[in-house]
Length: 544
Image (tube, rainbow, N blue to C red):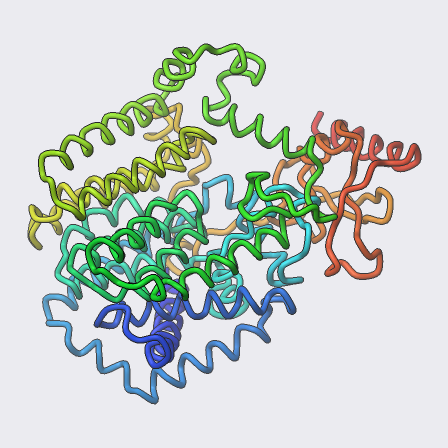
């Protein structure tokens, strides 16, 4: 907790300093200290995204950004902004921050933390963005901008990767600063994302803030749309937010199309990043084929697509079984999966229906535009891969609109206190989740509370791996563990090795002498196939 607190005290002034610099260039997103923090996040993320095409995001990339941020923070005496909080608000900020820091100190338990988040950050800090890296380990083709932001701060400011805890404190400050107390009610649920740099947390928080600004009548379409595109770039399933902001600008603010140029430039950067790492504009969808030599093998894309379809049904059916479903079976089997996923899916559909009826009754233009945006997003998600993690934001948005005018400070603090106590209890005594929600798989990976968390947040170490070579690629594979969070680079997950060998291909360096030149896939020669088979046999023998 104490070390996360130090990171927070250090990073927030940097964000504010960069936010002030961004305001000098692009104008004000919204008034207040959190407006500067959000612009600071946007500015730093864009700088590091461009920079990591050329250099790794190591301490030499981090220190100049820190110095610039601190320079503007003290030069413009931004610290004085905190004096405007009343004594009551200051005590509330302290209480909220304590709960957030406590929750953030627990061990990470989201499996993507070990298989996707940390490996991505390791690549960014050691090499930067690598062309065609999806050929090495498919999931790395995502390279979320949020992980770029986290990677930049991971060398010195936030070595324990708790940037999400810092963001939660920023979100708490926003709710208090704007006197929109409903935001405090969402904090306890969001505590579940505080231990890992999960992109789900920032997109939920940013979307609620932007939606709040739109409802409040903020007419700065240039920055609202740009920030909405930034949210989309973090996680493309948030497509409803830039769509809503765009429609809001056209039909309510009556702004000109030219005001969206900044946002479209961000969109271009997002597409370019994906094309560089994955070969197509939007990961993991193979649409927009430019014929690039580093795009993934079609069979690998096919395996990924089949896996996504199976994930839609929580891996409870084989791909072959799903292919035999009738249209009615697709709907019925998705709604009535075994376990908690069924309840979430039913609640999602019921929520959309209820919100559509609510929109029809209210007949307010803004709510209508929001409903249309959410429905379009939901159609895309249902069509590609209807996993609950892709539409969880819809629940927050619907609750936000429905409860917007009905929660005051006192009610919100009570709700926050009760829910936080419940969530901290679950994190401290994970057996409760495992007993009452056995179908909630991440619950089985929650470790509980340890006294050392008071000083240092919980982190795992493994550092057991085997080294192999196939063709010109020397690589490492975690020993007797499916994820490479603590494996030296270049590392490949065993599951992707199996898929590649099954397909008859294997990743290779574009230039055997320079890993930064990127990766391609190549059909294996008989000798390379023998090398790959040896790798698989070794992995299987270790697992047994």
